[in-house]
Length: 208
Image 1 (cartoon, rainbow, N blue to C red):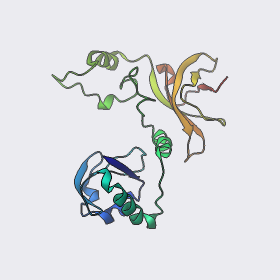
Image 2: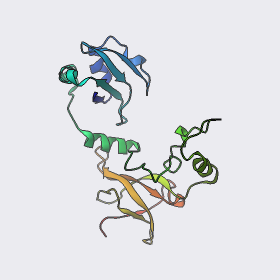
Image 3: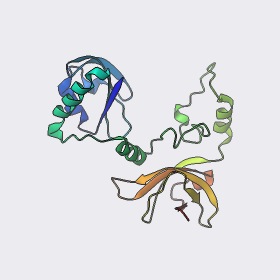
Image 4: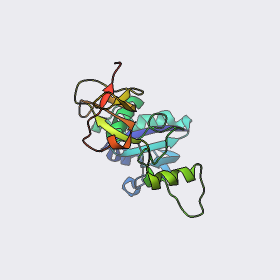
């Protein structure tokens, strides 16, 4: 399959030109399959990872060129631009969205990452590491994923150590970038729970 993520508040206006499916009827995190830009069996999904709204389109690779051109023609009046995953990464970080491989991996848990709301302990449903996750939810965790912003110039990078005011290491940066919207360094990282409260001052060790 091929995929295009058409993101931004005007995405629905551009894409509605290309399908008879009422895009406003596709609720967040759901999808419909139908005709799009003259092509059959296109998945139109109200998803994306920028926080700006939009749709992800899934289709067979042989029609990718046709759909690409149609999307850019439909979006021309809205000043649509092609852009890569680097932009998605900065925008998802502004929203505090986790990225697997950075903020989530085999060593982290959804409870530590603040994703308990998607961890369903339904009766009779067993899943990997359920007992430990239930314990974490009941007893608490030893680290929490938190978001931070820099007060000085600099870009926090994945793997940089997080310290307290005395220089004691209390965690590690999992994602960091220069915020395109706010023009400051922002990031996320795991810290000891007592340092995760909003307003807490922490330090990022940038190469010493």
